[in-house]
Length: 146
Image 1 (cartoon, rainbow, N blue to C red):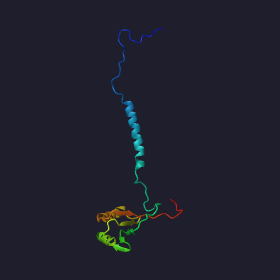
Image 2: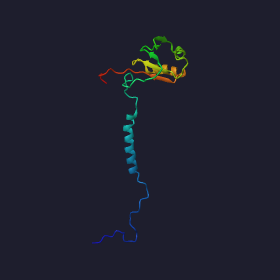
Image 3: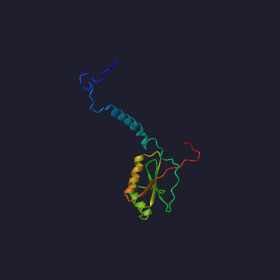
């Protein structure tokens, strides 16, 4: 029993080599990559469900005493223990730091205050030429639930 694979008429066969690009594997790979990126992209964001007022970070050691600016829950700004108007803040900070733009300034904000108000005060301080402005957070008590 013999099988004629050549077609019998001298032609190479009915099926010619396919010259088109097979895009099915390409689409499969792209869909897998799309799913991977859709799953991992939300995990890379850092701005979701954070509680800024608590941290376990060690305190920063430095040789100069920092200047503390406090923002209470009602939006009132304090320089040390004195109430300060936001417009006068830069001038009083320059006087307290003896015109040293590299003097450390810590900003303490109540956790119930609007984040925009804290950023407004920090922006006022940095627009005054101060380069070392940082937010302070309270360290949790030992054994406290996280």
